Image (cartoon, rainbow, N blue to C red):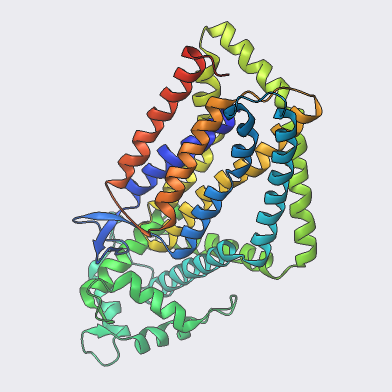
Length: 418
């Protein structure tokens, strides 16, 4: 339970606040402008992210039920409360999985994001080809003169701005046959990436700045592979190949037999549940033995060290994703954080409740439950009714983290709640 509470608290405080900091963009009329960070800043998400936060807040109901007898100082109803909470937790887990099947909005947004990345890599490859491979200078920086000449080539009417029709002609000319591409949607997203003046035209300076941003992103993703004969890098080809494989995976996941995917998902959930149940006791023993050997209180190991270790990959992934400074990626990042907490609250709790009920143990985790309730309700309410988070909102999350640690420590070691 310390690991469960620590993971929930870390996801909704430290990682959540860090995503606000690295993903912040300029706010205009309470909406973040993708890719720009020069003044008052924050993060914007879509309405679906609010729904994910509400689902997360609702998922704490089993904690309330199992804790109710202790709150009422009743000992006779504790075993029954564990059974009721277990049933409700399992029903909520099944309902959440069914909801994911019939409302796969996170998957759709992932596919849309993968397609947009494929468009970016395709346009970069197309420009590299027409620039004879020299999009970069000899020192590896974007060649602005070459990019300006490419702009003049795309600007058919030579009015100094790329219209949606000219960008559409560019995308049609590239021929993205390998993906089911909505060309109008691709054009609108390219304009959204480049058009910082919001006049529905991509001016020359905006085009240069946008291509440079794309090139730098490709360099970070594709790695630097020097071509001695061309004076540039192969990273664009590697970036395109990576995006092609990512897009292929997304499309395959989208068109495969849905029944088999559902069965596979259920089997994976059952496997994860069995693993959690089988290793629960060894994990507790390992924490106790390590605590005794190092003289470190088990509270710090279970509530701080283990959550940090188990959530490190998810934390790095979320922060890198948020650092792309777009509403689309921010929405995906926060939705997945809320989804991870929701699964903690229904799947992991179901495992613990089942172990407690089957073995006839006493449920006595008041401090951990209280912390989970406070953090989930506060952050859930905070994120359920707003889609814009100014930079100052990260302080709410960062304050909650030491408060939660202090609360558990005081309740456990001072008042002896656990």
